[in-house]
Length: 379
Image 1 (spheres, rainbow, N blue to C red):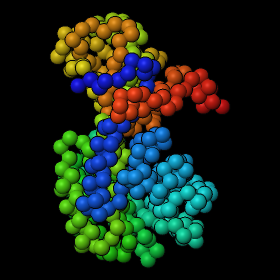
Image 2: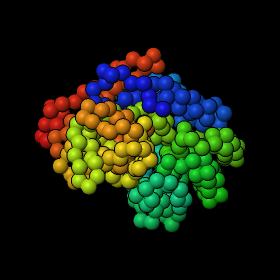
Image 3: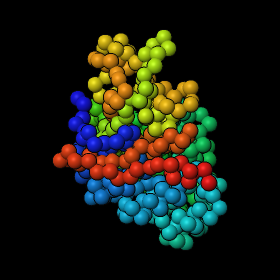
Image 4: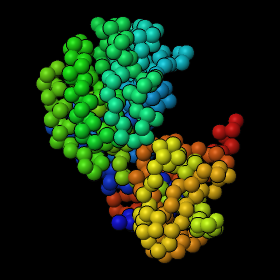
């Protein structure tokens, strides 16, 4: 079903659907209530500070992948801030002590160099463990934190070199777009294989990749697994979903700006795979367009591409009931995750507007970007 979007939306634009976001937050609230755990927003996957007030009452804070995300979490969300990076640059841990409540280290070397700074500042020290559990359902090894040679987390071979007497939080992140079988499997895997270490910490963070709002995810099974884990080990449990909190909660609105043909019909959009939807090329995947079908499914099939000079700036092939024409508006679904925070101004392509569709159907423009943003990035 095509969402009802005001004609006043200027494309390209990322549009957050408040009603959909609230439905997703209700899932998080249920998990927190029934499992007795804490849930953080992973801002690496999605961050729109204008929407943080909608999330603040439900979530316990944010988790960051470095100093700038941690600062945003502290200044704009204002609750707990957790941070992990595979390594920290000179002075970064010192600066993070003013921003983050929990600082996670990646290896025995990293924790040896940073633990004194974190503990002296009264911050909780965590360590990321590579649990050897692969359940990334998207993108293969590219999105599997436990793939061979992964730079993420201390492996079992080095785990006894960690200063367990000073570690507050045992952190694992092994999932990507996983349904309940992945979430439950990870929790049970950690309980079986790391029990002696869990009994030496105060908290366990099961990371992100829990696709709690995806169709087919059995939240009841996740709740039962967390409850059983907490009962066995008597520790605080954290989850830090990012995409899982904004699944199907927003759109990328685009407009057809040109039609051409090279053996097949081709429509050029003001939205770009290369600059606005990079995961389309990196994963790769084919995003949904409301009202469109698979190639050949409907009467008129088009290759859809962006206006950049990159040959591979192709979004995919779609079919429509009627021929596309310049000025037609297309709406891509599930556009609040990852691509939203990974876009670029390559080739001078303008960044999409950021907007919010409120529950009453009204539209609020949050931010708009022009030449100045393109020029600023070039120094």
